[in-house]
Amino acid sequence: MIFGYARVSTKVQAREGNSLDAQEKALRENGCEYIFIDVFTGTRIDRPEFERLRAKIRKGDTLIVTKLDRLGRSVAQASAMITELLDEGITINVLNLGILSNDSVNTLLRNVLLSFAQFERDMIVQRTQEGKQMARLTNPEFKEGRPRKWDDEQIGHALTLLKDHSYTQVTKLTGISKATLCRMKKMSAGNE
Image (cartoon, rainbow, N blue to C red):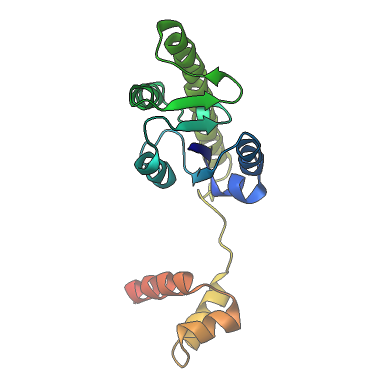
């Protein structure tokens, strides 16, 4: 069987079709019968869809990915995983690289490429941290994370509605999700 694996790091990338659509298209064009897709950072080894793939793939099967860094961005983890798959008799085809093997030259090449992927990721993290630090220095009201979608007045109104209406009704009336309502209700109960 021919399996495909696609991955992006963030939900924003997945929603915007950053490279997920292109990865899936390339995998299908190269004969993948089953495609597993994760929206997880490449540094995590416990990716749900990759775990499902690992449970299905067997000796003699082929795993196709579009680029080496789709398998992982940590040299140690990705290299160990690739070696393990190859030792199990699974063929790994990286579309922009070719068929991988465990010979010394191929192992060196993939570890060099994985080192660049890890370096790239580390630089992104470093720049993000520097940006947050600069934002804190220039804006004392800087808060990490997404800006709030609902202001205090809207949340207060929704919580008032909850006294006489169900969560489902308040969600329909206000557009505020049940999860947000529950969280805000819990927070307001803690402030009383």
